[in-house]
Length: 434
Image (cartoon, rainbow, N blue to C red; front, side):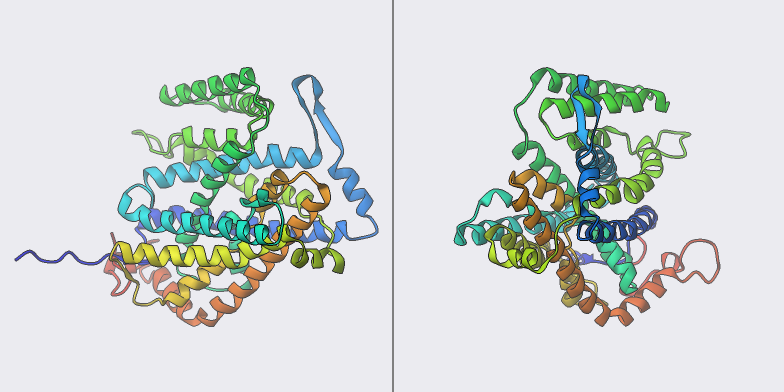
């Protein structure tokens, strides 16, 4: 008689190499998230102060090289230029997940991918339904689709919850898939009139970038000028310039050759990730989050169909999509939830995924042309993200004693050898070392 295969445990103990990579990424994102939070607060205070005129003048100040089609405002430089660095890091992280991480096999990829897809589809559908019923425009359907991992981790840091590493890793992987979905949406649905010469030049640059990687060419003096050229050509092609960032991130090699201490992808991520999280994204937030938050402006969030649809998509659609997608994936794969956790913990994580700040603000700018409407949609993104953060804080703090016990088990290292004891002795409910 054939013995039944053991059921896979979800949200159990991560493999040690994966745990190390995830911990480093989350540490940088958490610090960056706190800086992002400060930048957003400064933007809101500045834009609603007597010096709001100075804020707008600085945001709209143009500089660049007009002959190369790069005469942009400060706001556009941060959205099209600095966010390309953010998407470069996202591309590297996605490549790492696909090659050596949770997305490398269908069995491990099923849970975060299904959850992420549902977490994108349900908010988009709810936005479309809400906006259509209210007689508004369906153009903003993409705005509530993305999770802001940095802001979510900043919330976890502020409320001092000891969320187990498996749940944090799931949130990070979910956000990585979200970012891929966002960049595909930007590339397909928010492309202007195409300049095929510039697009061809950008593609040729990416081919050269790939060839340099394949021939193991090293040296920043090759890649930095080439990367800037690819970005400029992509911008002039009519395709959003951030696509260049994620494309180069996906091309970078994430496996080590013999004798290499780090892969090129890991090396670039280690150097660029702090700049992305601590400078690029906060500067974007500084010039994107400065919206009016007077009583009248906030009232528009609940009276105008488009901002109301964005708010509903983030607070209700994202939460339902991620939770139901996770539940369906576990049931479809006949897995079992970690016995130390409850579905309420997964629901709390889904609420945290409703924080959609950076990419949601970018998509809001791309989806609408009326400046007043963009301001109202941005206000809805801010209010929806704050609401999701407050709900997540209440739900996750309620179980913090459980999380603290699991975290202490994961971190205990009595022999001080740098490897937690649970990886050497195994854990009854953590799945043991894999």
